[in-house]
Image (cartoon, rainbow, N blue to C red):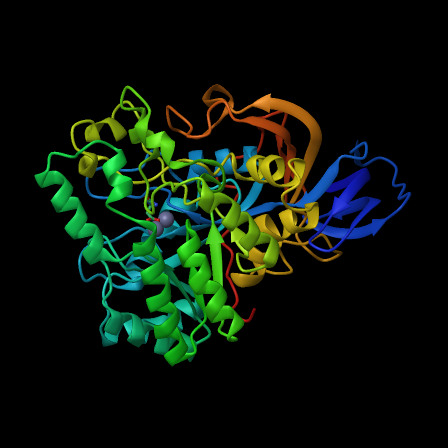
Length: 458
Ligand code: URP
Ligand code: ZN
Ligand code: ZN
């Protein structure tokens, strides 16, 4: 299959220029002005932006959180991703039976994804417990193409500091990357019980039971633990200034520390928890949506390079049946928000169109850095001869409001309803195939391929 794209305003993490691109067999073959090849499919991009396809390194498809099962699977989730300009996702394997092996979960996730995913994909290993068997399995997981492993500091399968230390020793000597959900579990536990005893069970007490300092403390603890083991550390869904300050301090000392934030922390604020008619439940996620002043700090962290990626933490539940389980008690509301489809548009609009970041930084955080950190660069995350032809056209002139009716995520709401967008993806190409045009998915179910990722070497 061949494809010629004419007059594209190509944007990478470093440059922008007008050119044509010739694609064959799913790969970018030539980038030059005035390429003429008769009798092949040719599309005039008309000077719109052409960026490397978005890479979302934090999704939770098919996840069962005990009180609810998320509503997006690898088909609906990747269709939504593709419609929003994302051509690769890295999903977090959910928790398996207590004591199960890493490969048990890996096999399960291969089954979930193959025959369903419509874009290329990989998984992060998730560590439920630490023992010698798990530590011994890590090398073979890395050989199987899974070099990143997540440890939670809260929830049922939280790891102790000692477990994190053992894990990070192992990963630092094996070419692995430790990714961490940082929140101080004791503080959360204590505050949740205290608020419940006082009858404070509305959504805003979800936020109050998880203060930003409890995230900051956990980031700092992990930075110290991994400084002992020299293990690369990646902080997921950073939401607050306190965490960012600890990251800056560690990075400025030369530590291998990286951070991800998500659109919800950049564009929403805590007032969402006080919306009437149980609407606040729509925003229950962990860490919670913060006070407004954190937003500008996070944008600054992106501009200064302390935050390298913007992912979504897409973990979707329906409002009408699942989020509403928390209407009398926030503790019964499943944690998580949809967002895989709105990330690229929100980052372009809130970031580039509103002048908070330049367009190269936008490409860096939504595509290039995720590819580099997670071992798929330069196959993904760049526009160069030899790379996969994963490309997204962005029309910077489109103005519209985000509305659930236009999205493909399998939920009955979006937390970004009514936000005005200036500029958004209008075409998605995955390995040379146009899979989304005019907001319609036109590819085949199951066309996505598993990406065997390289060991960490950023
Ligand atoms: O509330 C959230 N973020 N749910 C998804 C699981 C996680 O913590 O990443
Ligand atoms: Zn998390
Ligand atoms: Zn998550």
